[in-house]
Figure (cartoon, protein in one colour):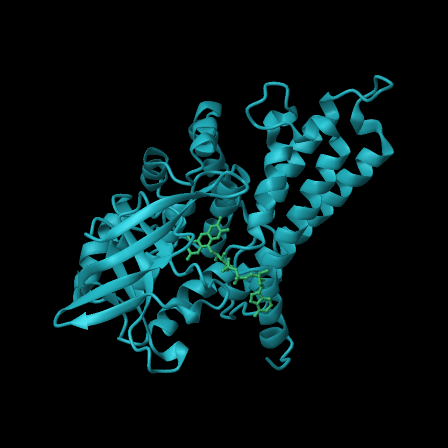
Length: 386
Ligand SMILES: Cc1cc2nc3c(=O)[nH]c(=O)nc-3n(C[C@H](O)[C@H](O)[C@H](O)COP(=O)(O)OP(=O)(O)OC[C@H]3O[C@@H](n4cnc5c(N)ncnc54)[C@H](O)[C@@H]3O)c2cc1C
């Protein structure tokens, strides 16, 4: 087992870095920050043009046949630069599921457009009354000949106000056990009866509560068999749970190193010379390294034919909780200036310390909360009972 990148992957990573350095201008970053929307059409199309949308996909589907490590460094760089990539990620995730289980008609309609950046897809799993226990979904889809009538509401449908479709979890058989009465649909968001209302999180991210009032869609928009939704959904949850957030720690480390090298302490010498500063920065560096290795272990396992059932959640829990720890520790060290916000010209490192502290909290919630991830580790990794 080795986690060093080979020279080709390093060259690919450098290419990605060059592209992002050009695309992520300060003006662009500020616009993204002000809207709170984790997507920008031109930026996403730029990724598509460079072949960065789904580099691992086969060439015949518009990919580049690249390996898992190339895809991994791409994801690391996008996260490290805080690029607005969430809608591209959810689109790619759902496109992969359609590629695996979609009908030929669905593949024809969606895959080409998604690969060109012309079609985007948001995720509609969570409801106002259920998130972790997502199988308790109550949004109903009732069959009406060749159509389905959908009624209900979903919480946290991030990008639901701008996406073309939502990958929707709906209850089709309320009389069956909860995991066995669910079906997945791809709902066109220009359908009558759909509405998205903005919700802003602590970190300023825009997400949505979405309403479905007699939304009528053709059966052609069903993904997988009727009542087989839990299986189809599992394909995307596995993808989400195997994530790691370490590159945001790398970002924090970069900013704090820069701050320490350029900011004088009370005696006039750089902060970098102070023991407490060095101690805290070293701690962030260690957690950054462990987060990276835990994530790369998942890639290595996937590459060698293993499924990181417990290792994915380990990577997610560790990296997100380390990000919370590290961002709070650094804000405390920087002092009152550290909580100056993004728009204040005098904020150190452009206000990244304050923003990272707020941003970090959400990372322990979405894609499965820390508590839920710990249960998965206990059951699937350690074989403990439910
Ligand atoms: C910014 C943001 C973006 C999001 N984007 C999307 C999106 O695009 N699409 C989408 O569908 N969802 C999205 N989500 C929803 C996210 O997946 C849920 O918030 C998450 O799954 C938790 O569900 P919940 O909020 O209903 O909390 P709950 O499930 O109600 O949990 C509340 C608390 O109870 C704990 N808890 C719950 N069950 C257990 C258990 N069995 N054992 C121990 N503790 C437990 C949780 O850990 C948590 O601390 C997003 C969330 C956020 C914050």
